[in-house]
Image 1 (spheres, rainbow, N blue to C red):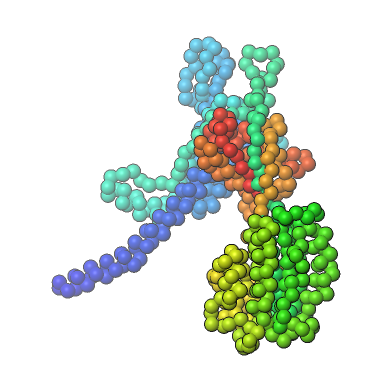
Image 2 (cartoon, rainbow, N blue to C red):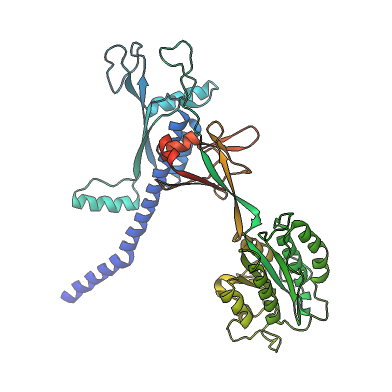
Amino acid sequence: MTDTLMSILGIALAVLVMFIIPTIAIAGEYDEIAQTTVEVAVADFVNTIAEKGKITEFDYNELIQKISATGNSFDVQIELQVMDDNPERKTVTTSQTLNEKGENLQYSVYTQDITDKIREKITNDEEGEYNLKKDDYIIVTVKNTNITIGTAFKNFFYRIVGKDAYVIGTSSSALVTNSGAEEIATGTSGEEAPKPDPISKTITLYIRNTKTVSSNIIFVIDVTGSMSSSADANGYSSRINMVKENVKDFLNSVELPETSSNENTRVDVIRFGTISEIMTGNGINTQSALSTFLSGTYNQNINASDGRFSAYENYDLGLEDALTCVRRNKTINSKKNLVIVITDGQSAYNSQYCISHNGNMSEYAQKLITQEGAIVYAVGVGKQTSTAVLNSMVLDPSKYVTKIYDTGTESQRLDSLLTEIKSEIISDEQRTVTSVDGKILLQDLTTISASNPLRITITGPITQEFVVTRETDSLLEKDGDGNFWLVLQSLALRVGGVEMLEDVNVGIHY
């Protein structure tokens, strides 16, 4: 009997450990994610109302969509504490009783009245919005009405220990800073209510220019006879044509200045096989020189039919020329050096011309990386390329070695790989701008989305970051010409006031 009881207890314990506890943990994580989502959505909704001075159908529906995306149902309660500046008129006062004549008192309006008013306006072909006044106060409270699995577990536990039931919910409030409609100030004769003075501030813009790169670039391209074989990817007639066109597109996407300078990015192309050749002389550092090279020498000589190169891949010679370019660049500018080796070499080509295949970096690869600090990528064109050869050129094969073909689980294209590599060396163009009428023009910004967000970094007495993913965010205005402007009054509200904004540094990244 005792053994049977112990067996039952053991099984119960095993079920608890293997199934129930993990289920409780996962359910709790889902509730935590939902809680965070609700908190952010409600805070954004309240801040938007405070800045706009109005509750719109669009903003209310957006709040409902965001919180409903958690898979839960919610009760949304809005309380608007309205500043009543004319006590003599009759009002429905639900929170306070009006006192003596002349006092400014508050009365509350709740969710049903607000949504009814919005629906009434829509019925009358008016804008679906409920206007507020400056100094009104908005309070939004949200709680879930369904019982999640995580909630059920927590409620059971809370009943045991005597706590209140657990819910997903939050509350947020804010003072309204702008009137939603044109208002006439009390006691004046038709004068508009005073508006806040425009905020004057200098801000730094960091603009991500996809054509501006921060590294010198050196391509080391295999032009041996095997590169004339059919390409594994993209429908090109040969591997060399695929490489030639993709590298050319990459270099055409790099924007060099027209005036030669030591600080300009330098571009080099090396072709190698049995022998090796630096095709770019002392390096190319102007746009016109790059265009001339790509339409002339490059087009003529990147092929797999030159008998001087076609027999074997002498990787050491190609890497030695790359090392020569890197050392020359280091005497000219302080930029990083990026080396991209592209080959279809196989380990069967084990001859005096080939790099050793013992898994160690060759002498020249060692010097390139460890002594000169270059970044080296090794790209194999086709499945037959020796992994050992590629690995022996780089410091971290998991990061810097790629094989190019578009079948199977290792699908990859050379053009997309080069785009990824380029994204690692794009530099931000930095501009310092001063506000105009309290707004900052976001130069060259054409779109804002989750995949192309606007980041606002605040440093100084406080450190904060705001990520803007939609064009309708209250921090932004869009003019008739399609230009985006950052509204400093809205930003001041986010950071805690105009005085706080004056004390911090603001950086805009896009």
